[in-house]
Image 1 (cartoon, rainbow, N blue to C red):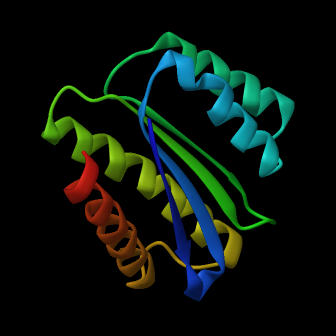
Image 2: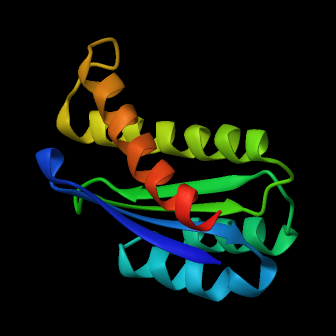
Length: 129
């Protein structure tokens, strides 16, 4: 599993992203969720999700008050599935940031956010994935 830290300075928001999640990585992901202050129920739900070991899936949890998110993307079966899964999870991050900061999802700002997140992911994926 590969991890990446993304910091969106404009929003003072930190995102820890895990790529290539396997069942054996469950504890690391769950520990990260505990560190950002996720509820016990959310951590248990994530644990169950991770242990299923399904490809082409992901999860996103955020602590809105703490301005932190954890994203985990399972192994994917193709480059297309990777793009689909990562952008799906990053959109959750965008909606969490917008909800926390009162940004209207119909404005341009969320589109820029999504672009910045995709740029960060693509920098890593060009090197590692």
